[in-house]
Amino acid sequence: MDEKDKAILREVQSRLPIAERPFLELGRAVGLGEGEVIERLAAMKRSGVIRRIGGNFNSASLGFAATLCGAKVAPEKLDAFVAAVNAHHGVTHNYLRSHEFNVWFTFIAEDMAQIDEHLARLAEQTGVDDICSMPALEMFKIKVDFPI
Image (cartoon, one colour):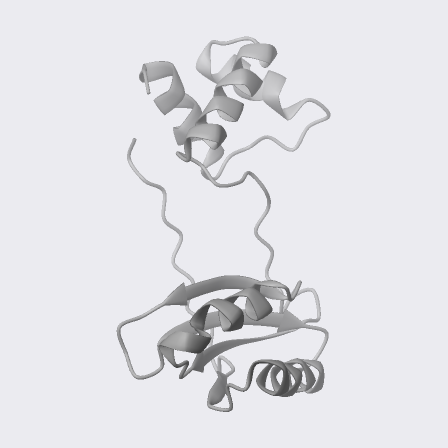
């Protein structure tokens, strides 16, 4: 990564312009052309420096329910369980932890009843019965921009 890549990353963390041609606007902010910005972002995505570019939405403000889930998954069931979790469109994060509850994921749906239905189906499909749902009672959101 050179200084131009770093400048692009500083901008896209929280300030991708909402415009008809956002990469043209981004290029103007960092002194590059639209095509070069797109090429550099594509290269950074291919190399794994960035995973995605997209919006973050407040699901509760949009009328959705969300919960953090933890599951106790035996090592021999881990791959199948993770694949089943990741197949759900409402899963936004999924990660392993060194803990009795070793798989954690967030789940968003239209309401808690729908989340409960999906979790029950997930348990039935994978044979993992120990899945807990922990809906947030209060939201604490920390915005982080990395100094690149």
